[in-house]
Amino acid sequence: MIQPDPVEDELKTLIEAEGPIPVARYMALANAAYYSSHDPFGIKGDFITAPEVTQMFGELIGLALSDAWSGAGKPAAAYVELGPGRGTLANDALRAMEGMGLEPSVHFVETSPLLRHEQGERVPNARWHADISDLPDDVPLLIVANEFFDAMPVEQYVKTMMGWRELMVRYDMDEFSTVPGAVSCEALIPDEIIDAHTASVYEHSTTTHKMARSLGKRLAAQGGVMIVIDYGYYDHLAGDTLQAVHAHAFADPFVRPGTSDLTAHVDFSALIKAAAVKGVRARGPVEQGDWLVSLGIDIRSDQLTRANPARGAELAAARMRLIHPEQMGSLFKVVGFSGHHWPLVPGFE
Ligand code: SAH
Image (cartoon, rainbow, N blue to C red; front, side, top):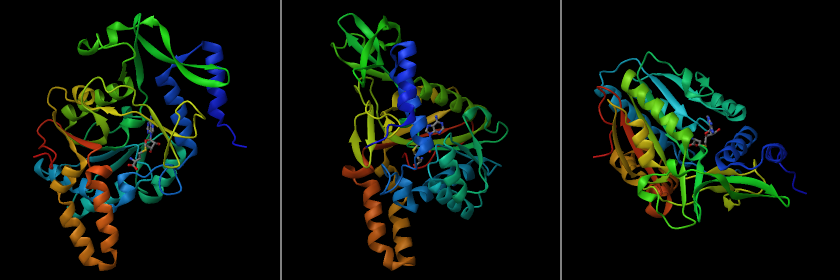
């Protein structure tokens, strides 16, 4: 018999005590439980991310950061990664940066003890942070977030016959399910979609908004750049994008919380608006495939193949997986941010 995750009981007890809880709260609790008890990456896990596909991904990111850093006059800097997974991207990026003379201090924002351990195996000199508030404030930051913001909780709002309501999670007849809340929330809905038809769903991530705003302020004050890569959209009404993935297949987000990865598509227009404070310039979103090609993935793949011809087929397949529109090339988008007096992140021309 399949054992329920302990978070399932915690959620039931919470809902029994307080009544239905916002989708965002459900998602935050379920994901915290999921990431602290699973290493989700790879064939045996639940999903594969770009840095786990090939070293070229992290290397090209490292080279892009080095390029911006050179243009800024090579100051002392801190590498910051949000949700570094297994530490693979950081390991590849730091190696590429070292080759360019860039050796930043390393800061990981990570809540999962299990993944912190994995990260320490690959990047022993990292320092860990539970959130972004205590990142260094005296040097420029080189920030990377790959598939991080999609794991942040989203609030969901639904248009009902009585107007817009927040979607809440209830527990009834042995099942979690969503139900419109009792309180009207018109004030939270963007003007452009306030008149959308009944049953339309609008998502907003307060967590992403707050983080993006505070990272943008850091870039404006301290200098540095930020590269955000994720799947997402660029207009307000993308509908309900909450999804669960378990063992490389879609699952029901409301069945067995804590055992699957819950994500929502990233609203890039909201993310850019939040982070692009005065003094910060944003570029993108562009498709991941185009960005990697413009950074030179073809050259890197040729170099690696020449150095080790036996790896040719594997490198060609990995390159294809990252850039092909039907694989990760179009679904994933990249946004670059540059702080005060810092050059633009390359690859967006
Ligand atoms: N960037 C990695 C992993 C993406 S999965 C890669 O590309 O392979 C999401 C990562 O974010 C995991 O490391 C997870 O533990 C972390 N994470 C999820 N929620 C978090 C939170 N609220 N604060 C910090 N890290 C979080």
